[in-house]
Length: 157
Image (cartoon, rainbow, N blue to C red):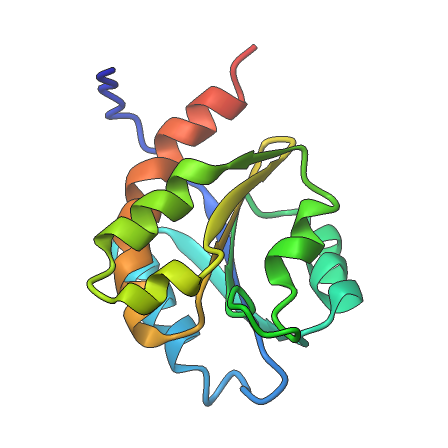
């Protein structure tokens, strides 16, 4: 299956770091992925939200003016990691191939303990990735290669 999508949209990306300990100033992973988007001319904003189901869902639902959401953190096996489980409750579809590709591209077997995934809510793309700087380096090229084609698919009549 070959898709030649050369069309680039002016998409808006919200980067949400899920953490109870990080601040905007200490958020190395959020800064890292934000810089990569901005280097490609993609408009971004960045915020922090607590590792809490209500806070995670509330952040998504209250920030409806974005096309792409990247939730950084809360994808691991800890009982405190609830990002993916929370966002599944308000999404209509899960694209498991994103997480599979993320784990394959990671040169670290610990990536297989991650629940990295892609969720869809209407025309919105919601990427959930681990909170480490290394994870953002692996995830960014994948996300970057998906967002325009996926936007085309999600907005088709």
